[in-house]
Structure formats: structure tokens, C-alpha cells
Length: 206
Image (cartoon, rainbow, N blue to C red):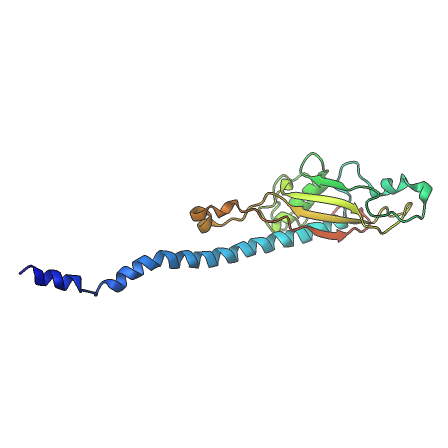
């Protein structure tokens, strides 16, 4: 009397699909979340690159951000070699990262104002890096001025430099995979952007 129901129960398959679905569903959700978060990570990567490109361009047409560094003064030191090309590595590099190594110029480029300590709202102050990527702060940016091999001692506009801007210490913001797998600790690469300077005083007020 008992064996028949047990045998029937053992061969019952009506709930197999539901059981398989419940086993597979967490994996499907995780894979879907991974695709979504990968796209979000690429968006953050792109935000960072665009912010660096903007900051490097603005630095190229602005006054020097390094306290006490003026390329005109630098070339004046070699005035006895007037007209002689300044080779790569002859002077510098000069690095600016965070306070107090830099002047208010870095505040202006990162936050939109020389006295700003956080991101200015879009439409107030001057355009800034943080408006392209709100996670970038003054301590997340390193600017390096290097001799480009162009220009000469005594050049009226000062030395011709390359300006390298890179990001430091920013991690990807991944809400799901960060919580599940700890991927919020993955650091965004430095992604340096390099431009050739123009005269470093032409756009210092904007």
C-alpha cells in the first residue's frame, strides 16, 4: 500500500523545471549584473579620460600650476646660451599633485574656481574636470611639466613643454559586483594624457 505512492513520487518530474530554474537563476542574474556593471565601468573610464583630456588642454593654455615654476624664468637661467635648443631632460620635470605643492590654478582646473574646495555647479565658475567626472578631486590629479625638446634658451614665450596629466587613487564604483565580489577596490588606471604647452599665461583667468 505504501510502495506505490513512493514509487510514483520517485518518478514524478512535474517540479523538475522549477527546481532547475531556481538553481540556475542566481547565476543568470550574476552574469546579467556583470554585463551591466561592465558597461558602467566603461562609462566611468570614459568619464575619467574625457576629464583628463579637458584638464590637460586647459593646463596647456593656463599659467603654471607649480608654485615657483615659471618657464620664462627657467629659460632665462640659460640666457648665455641664447638661441640654443633646450634638449629633453635638460631641465625639470616639475610635478604638481594636491596641496600645498600647487597654486590655486589646480583648484581652478579641477573644481572651477581658484578658491573652490568642491565642484562648482555647471554654469557657475569656469568649466572644470569634476563636472565631467564628479569623483575627481584635487588630490586625484597629478600634473607633470617636462621639456619637449622644442624651443630654445631665451625664447620670449618661455620653454616649450609637454604637460602630462594623470589620475590617481580613484576606484571604480560597482554597486552590485562591488558588494558581492569586492570589486570596488579596483583602481582606475592613471591613463596619462600628454599635450604640448602653449604660452602658459594666455588663458589663466578663465
